[in-house]
Image (cartoon, rainbow, N blue to C red):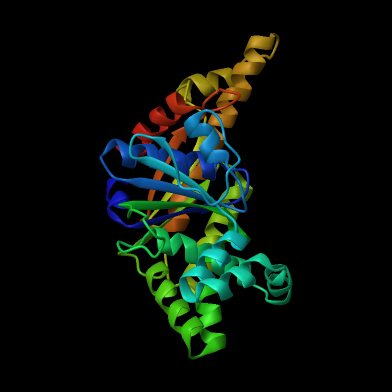
Length: 304
């Protein structure tokens, strides 16, 4: 996992509800602790990572906010990304008129995939050593906390889709440039997150096939989140199965042993399915909410 931090862009994706934001935040903490100027990007105006890292979100959108030493956060919305793009590409007066009009709403509604293209275009801009945003400083590492599987794939493939449709001109050129970075394993690493359960593992294996077919990428690593500890040896678990379940404690211990065994069976199935890709487990943390202390612990588990 340490090698992942040497890429300029890290995409964290997976099924909804498996802890993508937690893993993205923990990777950000690990990178910043190693002296890398890092930013974690969320999309669709979410700020889950910001609240976990800083203890509270400030509701700001499209603002690069410091949330720790060397660690930053941004919540990307497509409309702000379009305004920034127009100001970069057009004369000031023209861009202001277009940005203040309702054109974006109509354009986005009439153009499938435009919101995804603008979102990933901003992520790409963050990862450039020479950024187009006036006065902006470059980052050593950009971590994208991508949406759930289907929408996440749509974001990653949008640049190629638009480049193919336009064929020539600035849209085709810039779409091709962004796609080239996303499809290059030396510059972009994709980390899949799953929980040790049948459906999330199934979806992770399906995502692997889709990424290979549509982006030409394979997972750089897989993180299994929320793994129960192994409290009983096999002999102890077998002994529990032979005990007549007379007490609540025995029933609880038996259920715990079975769930832990099921988790390890799913992890083994996942390892076989991803074929040689590193699979790293994170323990189940019995906390109602995760904050900086818990994220530092998970960061240590991910990058040792």
